[in-house]
Structure formats: C-alpha cells, structure tokens
Amino acid sequence: MPTVGLFNIEGKKVGDVSLNEKVFNVEVNKAVLHQVVVAQLANKRQGTQSTKTRAEVRGGGIKPWRQKGTGRARQGSIRSPQWAGGGIVFAPKPRDYSYSIPKKVKRLAMKSVLTSKVNEGKIIVVDAIEMETPKTKDFIKMLSAVNAGKKSLVVTAENSPVVVKSGRNIPGVKVAFANVINVYDIMNHESFIITKDAVKKVEEVYA
Image 1 (tube, rainbow, N blue to C red):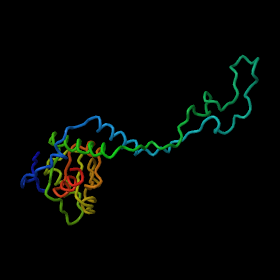
Image 2 (image 1 turned 180 degrees about the vertical axis):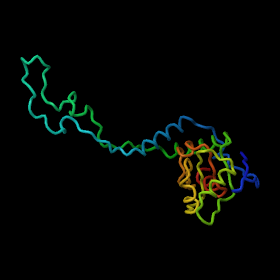
Image 3 (image 1 turned 180 degrees about the horizontal axis):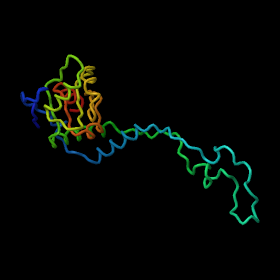
Image 4 (image 1 turned 90 degrees about the horizontal axis):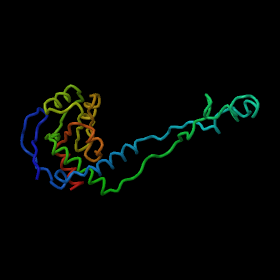
C-alpha cells in the first residue's frame, strides 16, 4: 500500500496518508491512457468549421471562354478550385468528432494516471484548503509552500467558490473537484495537489 506525506497549506508535514493500492498502485497501461486522452481531445472539438465547395460559391455560371481555339486550357467555370475565389476541394463541413469510450477503459485509465503520479512523486496531499475570502496571493503562497510546479491541478472534495476564485487567475493552475477530474487534466499538469477528503472520494469511486 503506497504511502505519501500529508502537508498543511503552510507546507509543513503533519503526517502520512496510506493510499488505496487498487487505485494508486496498479500497472500503468500506456495504451489505455493514450486512447482516453485522444477521445477527450476529440470530444472537445467544436466541429463548426465550414467552407464552400464549387457548388456553393457564388458566380461562375458562364463558361469563361470557348472550348477550342484560344490556346488556353479548357475551363468550365471561374469558380473551379484552381481559380482564385473558387471553391474548396473536399471542403470541411460541420461534423461531430466525439466518440464514446467504455466505462471500464476510463476507470483503468484513471487508475493508471493516478498511479503514475504517485510513482513520479508528483502527488501532493494536503489536509485541507481553507480560505475565508478569495485571495490569489494566499493561494500562490500555498502552492509555493508545498513546492508545486508551474502547472498544477488542485483537487478539492467539493465545490469551494473561495478556492476556485483564488486560483482561477494564476497561469497554469486549475482547480477541479473530485467528482469531475479527468485523465487529460491530470496528465497535462506537472503537480497533482489533492486534499485528504478528495482522496477518500476518489477511492470510493475507483476502488
């Protein structure tokens, strides 16, 4: 059973936390991680790009010159793709890029990425993040005290408006909640800072 240090927001170690080995100590499956991350990025795509084909571009109804005898290449329309202002070949149209991933694969990917953070020593468990009023300065002090990286994902057990407001203006820092964390966000951030209560929630879901 993996054990990591427990820190307060001042960066002082106040104890140790034993992590559930079914969640934080599994075999890292890189293929599954890749599959889930690609799916997440595909699902984020808006798919609203649209350009016009030669059938949709305005004008070009008349043949620009006669078929033979001019010495020039035959042309049927000035809106053909080879003309400036013409249509686009295989023009992109609005489409849905999203696709679904089996729940078992998602769960395995989440366990794999959490395990990788433990193996790399990039997980930081804090006893609680308590702030009376939103203050970005205090939030930065907390990140500095626990030796967080430039890109840090801070996970709390529940929605805390004060914590969210304190961290939302810091470049590279994202605040999330235990029930909405995803594989891509965890992989995309150098440090994974999570509260003790959030660890319990994650273990309840994935253990």
